[in-house]
Length: 309
Image 1 (cartoon, rainbow, N blue to C red):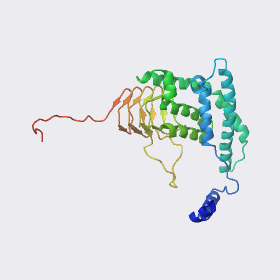
Image 2 (cartoon, helix red, strand yellow; image 1 turned 30 degrees about the vertical axis):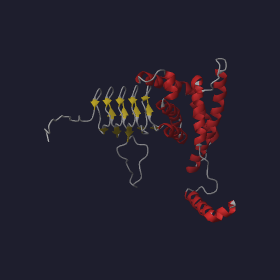
Image 3 (tube, one colour; image 1 turned 90 degrees about the vertical axis):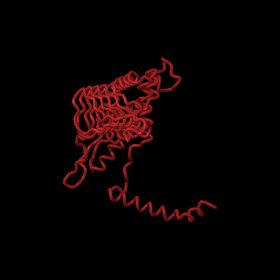
Image 4 (cartoon, rainbow, N blue to C red; image 1 turned 120 degrees about the vertical axis):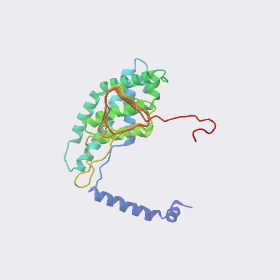
């Protein structure tokens, strides 16, 4: 049976027409029917982050046959190429925002300045990631080397994406930043909003199911385990019933805090420095420094010969 016959069989022509009409209606509703702006590409941004990782760690994440003499050339060539790609993606976001808000902006010039500032902060990002890797190595007895941590640990993959995304978020391109964070979320199961503020020596062990909200503030040398949530307790609404955006609604976690698996911490509360939060704890109130918070102890008794029934 030919493709034309198959099309008639499934009613493809009618479906194409219906989908076209829905698509045009959607664009009309958003006032973008004529020339809908393009968005930054998830695929391209994933490639960009991979290449930036190779620039920051050429011996481990770069090409396998690099020589000592060729590393600087590889770093320079790759960095120049990847920053050009990043410039194009940032320009797309700026054009999209300008169209949404009916503004006139120099998207090319603004994108150039953002990329320049981003590039200047890469050495500081590398230093932060080094501290994260060291924290993971020192905090996990299963880690045999810092190299193993870098190439194997999903927590480090997520943190690398976060560190890069956070810089872009702070420079005014939240969509590009969010896409980069979501690439790591898909790959690792760790969801870190690029707006969160996280200090050095940050370690996520195992990691699957970790959620860190947009306005969370995390201090230095903090350790989280899998399925930890740093979330919002409730969502404020304005007089029209719309959600209020950007208000501080996530926890503050001070220095040297450990939060064990499954803990849920909600709202703009503070976990004092040096505290330990036990597994599966549900927490919605402030915790003083150097506290231990755990679930109530289960009572276990052994009965013989039917006693206790």
